[in-house]
Length: 121
Image (cartoon, rainbow, N blue to C red; front, side, top):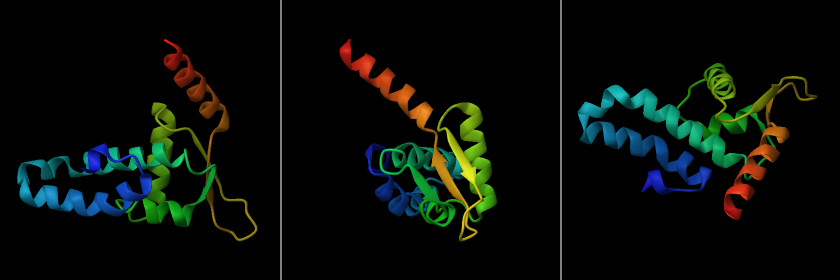
């Protein structure tokens, strides 16, 4: 179901409730809840870069429902950058005062080249 989903919007919409249901039905998995939430969040970010170049932090917070604050989302983004999972830049210098997140275009080009090279094999 959710593990095969390709749309970040569906993962975002159904992910949190699917995780809650999973933990209720299988109490032994409850100790892995934060890890599963992080995995789903990273997957949402990886899928979002196919739809967006930039995202406001408020929209990102709506999509990453596993996190209660922008600070927690920032920590996730920093960890993703450090681990090479998703390359982003956070910018708080805007006219409306709201922060935004930008997917790194250089990393996207490199990833596209690798994907293209793998398709040629």
